[in-house]
Image 1 (cartoon, rainbow, N blue to C red):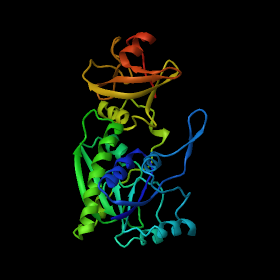
Image 2 (image 1 turned 30 degrees about the vertical axis):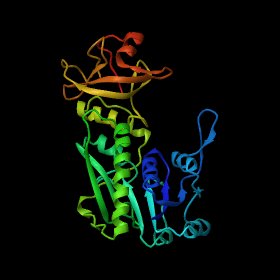
Image 3 (image 1 turned 180 degrees about the vertical axis):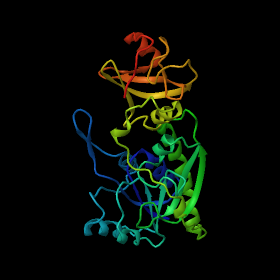
Image 4 (image 1 turned 60 degrees about the vertical axis):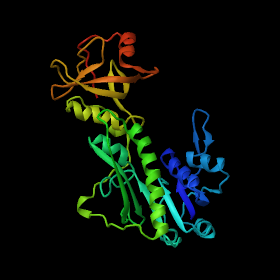
Length: 308
């Protein structure tokens, strides 16, 4: 099948690779413009562009698809189908209507739950036990199109959003291959979404980062898991910010919320009388390290209080 692929970050890379390896003709790859990164602010191509260039595929990087030029670029490629995975830009109606077989999207949740930009992170933040991916026909609304396939997977009790992201990217790639096959055969189902079950997953912000240890330990643990790479959950100790990348729930003697309960483990009391052990942290101005290593270097005393 002749396909135009639209995607940008790492999540989309397995899907593009799977389409290539399945033998589909990739007429063109649309991805977001290169962005400055690092200390030198060097222009860095998005991961999808890097893969496309490795296969010598035509790459297009318009600022928007709403211009006549961008719409003409898509139309000139004469795709049978457009596959969209975490592209990050809105497709106007003219683009949605361009391919005869439509536009399909891979979304990192079990729709209609968690429509929006951050479905993977919010699934973890909210303590969901199960999530998955959904492939769907694209419509003009936000993740509102008819569903084609769903693939479920459990979320591990200590699994971070980053780890779940990588698993869902691979699950999504296989779901996309199956979806394209069904569309090609003319047997792809169309299941309307139940508007009564809709929930949203907005973009993350740094306002979500401060840890409130008066909350139950499970909520704190989910916050740390859900914000694992960015914006990262954080607390304050002795006037410095401490980022927390990984944790686990722990039984511990009762203490006041935010109190350090052990001088060898970063065991912090929470509001429900349970505790979280901070397993991987980074103090402001220092490197990332394990909790016990941090304690040995910092020499915090039992009873020290962590604050938001």
